[in-house]
Length: 352
Image (tube, rainbow, N blue to C red; front, side, top):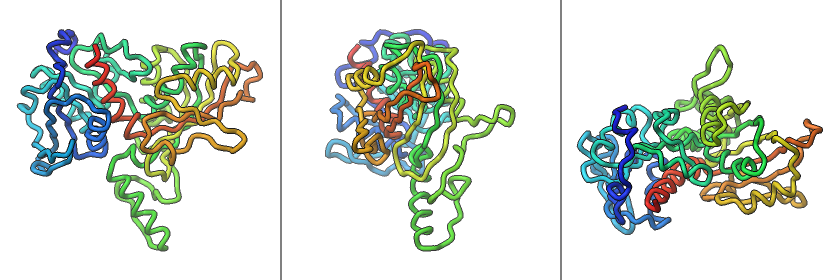
């Protein structure tokens, strides 16, 4: 990574009132959501450039009543760009993000390429927006589970420091991209019709099934890459580098929105009513915790929503000390887990 990325530049030079914004990976599932978030939230885009692979060049995508032509991503694509939103994979980010910064853009990167670089802030605006002041050209958008989980945990952590997290995830097809979402549709249709279906995108049958997350497995630890990402990134976002975290990540046949079951141990006992009050007042959180109606966070209700849904709050009976709470979380992976968080970072930069 060039040394220039570690040298902050004056914000006034980077963020005019109506910046030129580029989206790298504009035709992907997250790229399409980035376009939608910019429009829906009224982000003050002066000019929007849509960049993708050469095979997508020439296509058009709608934005604010117009059709914008997709351009082929090239080294010279970032001339005049103020903010570049990357969502095209780690390899593309490593190659092109430094070029974008050298051209004068601020990069908000949705891949894993820079998340653990000390010079690159890893940011969830509701949790650690202050870290933006330390960026030198690139800001990392977290793993989708880490983003959703930390929005739910940060209000509790501020009041009662967390000492340990044990979690299991229920991750939707959206986390594996548009191709996996389509495979779930096709596999489900085939299963309902009693027809055979050979998976091509994911390694196991997807319809009416669940399986360990398909990220590469470490044969020594038994943890897969998704799990190690969530552990490392949650620690970094919360500012707790030694926080013990155990997690099991599972792919489930849900089209969109991830869910997480977590048991969270705090430094001291936490009353359920206090936790509810903290979460109800937290930005980016919607409390869904109706015991009488057995109504708690669900992916079907989190899909398409900006807020992270949190509920099923209760004292963990496995810890008689009263220091552990159990909770259930659901959040839209394509929004708060990806595109929305990136646009919120851009909004925070504009407000500096």
